[in-house]
Image (cartoon, rainbow, N blue to C red; front, side):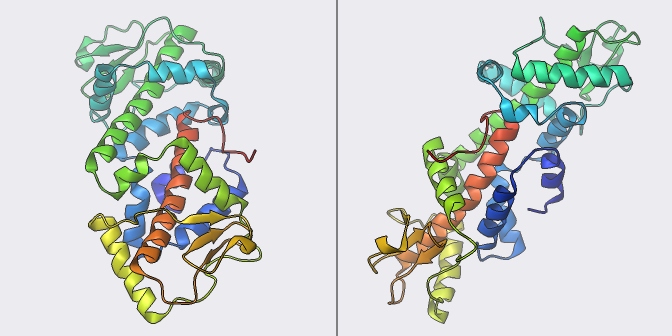
Length: 321
């Protein structure tokens, strides 16, 4: 989890140590070269325009508040119609970052942060949306507006009002959400293993996350026995087929809470010792695919949870009942 863009994106997000520890373990379990691992993680890593939009929100805003998103803010995002989402997404391609024609004053920065918390936590929204200009020459020095050709936000020389700051906050949040939604559409349309991951329900994501986070890494981890040379070779071959050719198991890996539940047949993930329980005989292709599928899902679930919390689509990480 050392990708530069990812470090920038999550630098202010309060992520519990257990999440980082388990996520690192999950990523290391995928036996691929670095380039292949990047492919695994790309599904919920934002493209350049998304990183730029999110950074703009983080520069003056607060991400701690994003961990406590309430329904009014989420509803405002979900109420955006498809045309509005498409317009924001197209606008994201107009520039590398949301530049300002002048910097915020220290007082404006302070109010921007305070208003961002009110926007996210209390549902304080602007009365109108940010005006859109066809080009810089269209700006007359009044109010706030965005140049559609460069994505530069123009500010008046006079101190910004709360309404004007809220219009900028609203714009940044809607753009980030629109990029998220369009990326979801792209992933689901691919029809490959990544789209199958993206189609997972919240219940499925929570189940795998909780099973893995509940597991005891201090006394276990890895496999109950070493894989043989033939198994390792077939694992690598099947992993390529899983990612590139649509190979997948007919049923999912079984999750068990204690080692006593394992009967010695098939493969299972044990929460008690964080190990994959393997039978004594050589694993079949089906069993290897179950392991590969589960390992990819662990990686995916961590990425998705971190991203959805950052996006305000979740309030916090799943908690055991």
